[in-house]
Length: 492
Image (cartoon, rainbow, N blue to C red; front, side, top):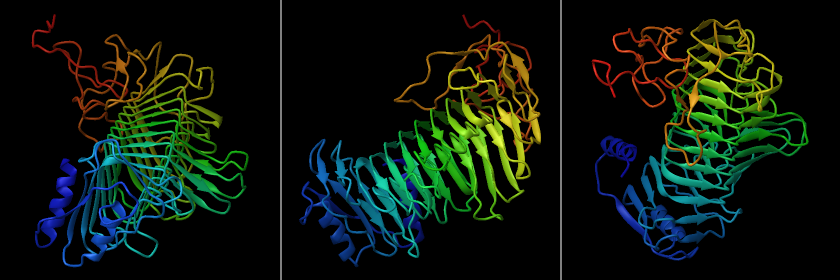
């Protein structure tokens, strides 16, 4: 059992009287019947005497359960349910593009792990849902689940719709969709997070997810992969990969915000994440922080040890921090990499609107501009508050009035990271790179917006020096080149 799953169960058990879980076994791939998945859900709903349930599977390897109509909602107030597919490796639950799969209200905890949820469809959360408008959703923990071709609509969320704490780890979101209709703002083809509690994503891949409009002129497609709409300040995406996700309105008015991630309100930490080839047809090719719905909302975006490559939008090719109607936003980027991002209007890498808050930029590397490297615009646009130890490739400009050093090369080495990714994902850096030892001499004062981080994209400590006996200085970018192994400096 994964560590975070153990913690979730332990917290639930400690909150009340401990009891053994009641186990139901799905031993049939039929859509109905006593030993079917549908039959087991019905049995849990009918069992009012117990409060902790485990659903396990014994249907053999690489089997598919075809769901012919919406599965029943799990609806037992205060109970914990664990759905564990590890007993039948390769198990796929298939909604055939017409039926919703796992949905719950009122639960104290829902755990889903080790299976594939495929082609589930609903107005929101076609494959997995916790909560409805007016009905509480319990916390969910999702581990080693493949979500593929799940779809949703006006209620947000193609694969997952969550109205409480959501922890996702070691999972894959592939080709999920949300369809947006005129007059509606919705999104999150992979995940829509609403209501109380944080979104925590760890070690997961988001590939080819689409939030798309119906060609209307009055709609907003929000977050090609993830849509966050709540005021929690500790949302986190860490050690993950986003590629080829899109928020757009093909053939209609320009409406896409956040090709990979859209933050409506609250605070988000993006740490050790790689964004490549994501697209929004309006703002934030990879990430957008933007809303007109609540001028008093607190919005913060912290980007740490992350890479942004070949993302595109009209404005803010990689990141757009708009924060409309609010002067209290915080946008803080450290030790990150931006290259080959593109914007058809302004700011191929970073855009921050005037009068919406504070922007800090330190120890970050900026390479070529434009998807093919032929762009000429400055990487950054907007008022910056603090900048320190940034580097820009010769022939390009950083902008924003930020401090920068011009370098002839970024010194990135190794092949371009590819899927399937091993985490963390980042380019290696040559010992001869001008990014090495080009930052400050110390780290650890993270309250100082000019400081570098205490660790890099691999979890290695910063700062380190490549020369023995020299005071360590932080490297620019996501990777800290390791110092000498031995005290005498002779590693060979």
